[in-house]
Length: 334
Picture 1 (cartoon, helix red, strand yellow):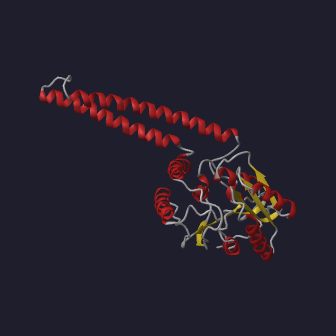
Picture 2 (cartoon, one colour; picture 1 turned 90 degrees about the vertical axis):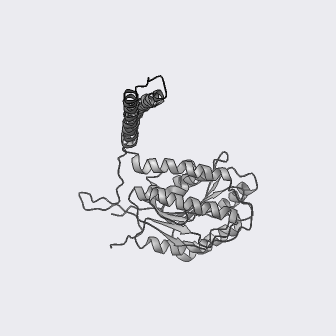
Picture 3 (cartoon, helix red, strand yellow; picture 1 turned 120 degrees about the vertical axis):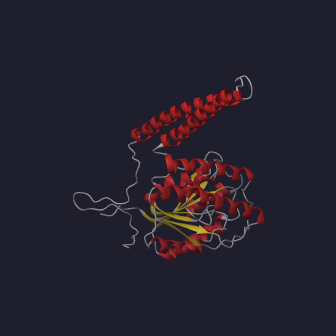
């Protein structure tokens, strides 16, 4: 049997000081979604706005049965707001997009059509991005870095406009600035992903929330994601491996110091002593890394076993009666 959902599609939109765009955005979304003939819900997440956005969202909720609103206690950031919206979403397909009108709602039907081809995730690519060059250049560099490090090659990780199958997000928890890394986390769980060029519109209301510190946080989160996707169930491989390398280099350094001293008839109190000290430090570092790997290995096992999780993600399951649990959106049989 199919896994049933109350809605065909859920839209999740983080909101932070977007009072100028909300009513126009909602009118566009309603028009597009009604034309698609789907059961839908629109979830706005107010991330501690300081303008009139909370009042406007309350009005939208009062006047539109398809609207849900999550009010966060303070400004937690875009990623936290997105996670809050995902937690409240009940659709088979979840679409994320910005609330500043730069993401075009008219792209939703095209993305949904791609999902019906059997994809688990469709990522938007702002090929003709309508932002200042000072924002585009760091973004290009970050996209290339993320693609190279993770092996998941997308042109535009920073584009919020993305569409996901519900079960893909069931395996993802977001922290920091990790919403842009959902494709990487989904791919690691076996999701079939692709990207498509989407229309990007110039900002008409409000101002950008982009800062240089945000770029730095993205780089730090990239390190976290790399560890989570490659070594989350085998941390001993990275810590133990580096420990053996340190130990080998330490032994080599000590051996060099001793051999050089004997061959040159010099006392270890002279400069070869530096190699001996370096070797001892590396050997101690080797033991520390191996012990750290063992500790993290135990923590990871506790994490999985205490929550009943496993180091895998199931796409479908055929039970004893032949039923299949899947989403209501058809997959490709190819």
